[in-house]
Length: 324
Image (tube, rainbow, N blue to C red; front, top):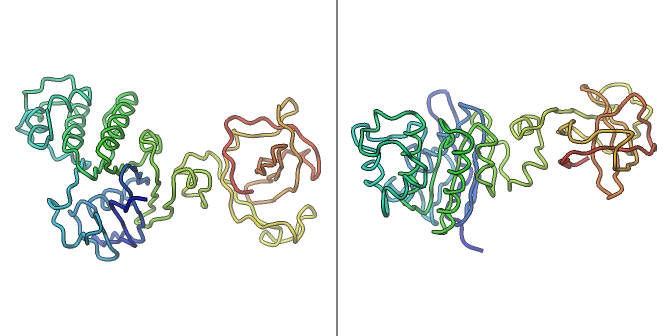
């Protein structure tokens, strides 16, 4: 396996009253990592640390095995499109890209489907046009590591999807790596990231392969960012007070389970058969832990008629299975 192009080991920093801490990541050539979290959680700060624009007060940033503290931004061989874009306002779109491009500037503007006049100052362009110029400039550098901060800003969904395809293809061609940061799940999933890193007010609360993070959010904050519509807290009777008759001490205790209730539910006309193993009570309602004929065990919302050991029918629409 190739050595990591970028390694973050317990990285953190302080800026005024804000602190970022505990960031872990190992990104290898050809991979894409996504940083997800709401505004103000530390996404841009993390990218600035990687780019060398912000000092890391704790942990290590290793780029190709070299200590980032000894590398000036220009020595890191990376390209970045930050939220502020950083365009040269008096220069044209073509010149903005040409000053950084490895190759033809017009080729990269074409890749970004830039249709405005290319020889007028970017100060006269719209927000979406400026975004395309900034992205073309970043990708045109063909750097080992490319950082994109909110790359879908000011772009329609189709254009954002096109950008993601171009970015992944160009990075794969040169065996580089890509990091995308956004507050929107759909913006990062367009890039089909190999790794998800989720921040909450400066803390790294989840860092895992994308499939693992999505199927096992571990807490309600991560689940909500990953698009789960309903967060269900489930606990044993002891936690809630008086034990319920359906719960025995042999039943496993589930501190929290995240679930999209619309995805799988009991239905008399459902095409899937299942057995109710147990009823689990939480402050948000009652869940049934069921076993499908396939052997998979999941949680679904219980109805007033759901009984332990009963055979039921369920309907599922692209279910996401979580530990139950």
